[in-house]
Image 1: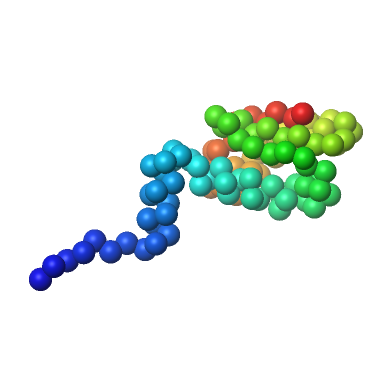
Image 2: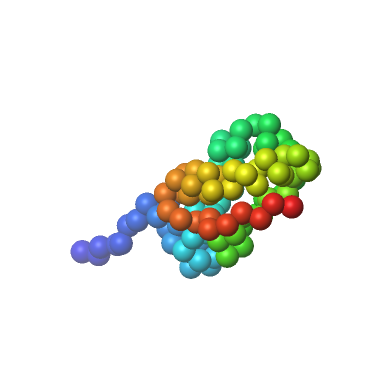
Length: 96
C-alpha cells in the first residue's frame, strides 16, 4: 500500500513563502495588514506608504503633526504590532 505525506494547503503555502521570502515574511504581511486595526482608521487614512525592511517599519504619512504624534507613540506601536504578529517582527519605526 502506498502512503502519501498529506499536509493541509495552509501549511504548504506557509512553507512555500518561508522558502522563497524567508521565515518572517508572513508575519510581516500580518503586521502590515493589521496597521489599520492597531492605529485606527483616521491614522490609517493618512498613511501613504507602509513597508518593512530588516525589522524596520517605514511609515509615510501626509501630515507633519501626525508624524510628530506617531513619533511619541513609537514604543507602544512596536509593542502592539508585535503582539499582533505573535513575535518580535518590528524593532524600529521610521516615520517620513
